[in-house]
Length: 267
Image (cartoon, rainbow, N blue to C red; front, side, top):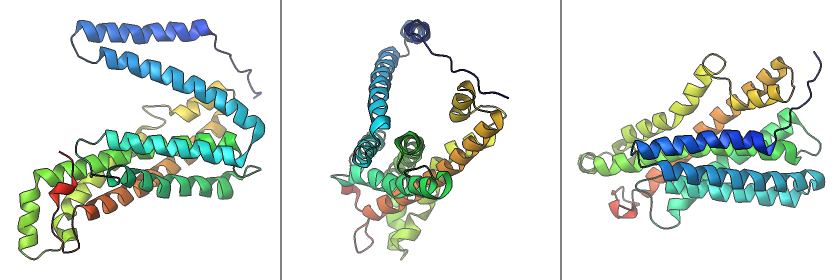
């Protein structure tokens, strides 16, 4: 089976798709859902961000400068860390409110990306931006969601069940035991999205990377293998990142004497 020619999208094609988003925003306004403006802002942001990213990647692919690749990766991590913080109703005060998510994503997504590039994909050079940036982007995007959900569940349930936690501490349990069920529940909630994605992949949904490769002309079996690799990497990154975030975050909720410190959370 030969490689099909890539179909180039015109501005008119994108405009037709954009009209559908405008229709969604109008329907949201008519139904008084209160999210019409947010839909338009999200569409405008994604358009601007993706067009700018396309220009940046075009230059980056031509140069393959490792420092530029590292700089773009750092920007991606910084923005992802902010998004994790913004998605929490109650978050840790100070730099920890931002640092827990960013550190957890760095430990998980970056390490798994390097492992995949050096051991599995083996591009030349190993930091080749056409492999490194898309791979890191997919890992950060999914890990970000898992970490945000896990931390939000952790802090929200800690405040809701603070009297129960303090009662357990008064009965002699240490901090880990007193908050253990909340940590487990937070981790389960953080892992549910990626578990559902793996469960339904190929039956209910055709994942984005596989769809993109098929549209670009790749053989379906090669596209399926790449998608499977990405799903496994995302699952590992989401799990490790969520576990790191919950362990670090729950540790910050107690002091050195295993006392719950609610003042470390923003209301």
